[in-house]
Amino acid sequence: MNQQRQSLLPDAPKKTEATLGDVHGAIVYATGDDTTAVTTFTKQNAHVFPSMFVTHRDADQLVEQAQLTRVFAQVAYDYFTKVIQPVLDLPQTLVSALYNQIFKPFLLPTDHHSFSALAPEIRTMAWHPHRNVLAVAHRKSTVYIFSFNEQEQKWESSYISDPRMKNITSLEWKPRAAGLLAVGCKYGVCVWHLAGTKEAHGALGFAGFERHAIHRVGGASDKAQDNLAFMQFLSTPDFSHISAIAWDPTLTSQVIAVASGTDNTVLLYDLLSDTTVPLKRHGKPNVLMRWSPDGQWLFVAAMGGEARLWDTDNWTSKRILEPSGFYVKSACWTPDSSNLYYTINKKDQVHVLFKSHDNAESFLETIALKVPSETVQSISGDKYTVGGPIKEIAIDHKKGNRLAISFEYCNLVALYDAKRMWANPLNSDMKPLIPIGYIRGMHTNESGDRTPKDIKPLHMKFAPAATGAGVVLAIARENDEITFTTHVI
Image (cartoon, rainbow, N blue to C red; front, side, top):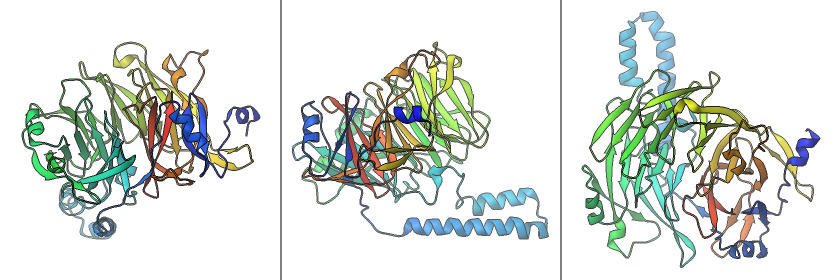
């Protein structure tokens, strides 16, 4: 490794340590019996959250059966196209009809990771925009809602489910709303209104909502209104395998953008007017969307190395091309909507789109950071391999000063100071993203006992709502545990 670069890398945690977060850029590690580190955060009016496990309510085998069905369908389709079709010489129109009617419903639409039959239990998660509430999508057609009880200092959980909520790929709370949660599924989008009372539902004036129950985990609710939920199912014929959703954050808007893993069109559903507007373009299916916080820009990424940045004032767009065979895997806007960080599958680079003027064409692209696989060590000599292909990135919503990066083949999460990137990234005098340290998993129970754990991260989300002086990062891990770090900026 280059010695100059080695000197720039921060120290890794000791084998006995795990990460609580950072205070003004200084990483805070703790051991199992260390209370001093927690005191560091309490003095800053910042909270340290206990970990939680996502335990599914039902041990049925439906998903396993679905995976076997897909495998059988793929084998049958391959045999049909490679053995039977050449012998019978069937017309292509008949082959296409057989595929659409018999094989297509069971086969995966794309090799994108969101549709993998080997997807983990935790599919995705999303923080409530105003409260310490975390929605977690389970692969068995269920979304868990974890609410933090401030008085008892513990997480309380409930869940929502519906037979149409199959193959969940995306999850997003509506900004500027009390409790509107959209869930992207195989055949459409389930929009859940979780405000809790029928009167609150009626005040929205939406049509087509069905009454459901919110089920408490570990006991019945003592408040009847807590068990109420309403759901509206958004679907369009021949538009399935929903891959991404994004709410328009504009104050008065009730629009949600929906993308499909089998279609190159983005649908804009307006819940208030009950209308649907298509954004059509040529190219491969879309797999990721991010709406800027100010509502002006909609970033849409497709398979095959193409993305578009839409200007929502006039719905013109700018094409952004990546090498063929690659796609945007993760992306996040800075809070001021001036920069978009994104990563490419199988690559170790963080790209940034930055705005120079108020139109889509003014956005320029550059590489903000390269993180090749390297060995780092702690002050006691413990060694870790960090870097390589990037799995996911997340930025804090409060100031945009913390960028977290997880990797495909690494248990540590790298944490960077991102505030220096808010200026023009092409400025040669500007410093790059500055490494702060590494987040190593820690199991923290409700009694405050802490145990370091080397478990690979799956998903990361910063909470939009600040907790005291800090911002909180939730990390879902392969063992179905969600851990939390606190960052005082």
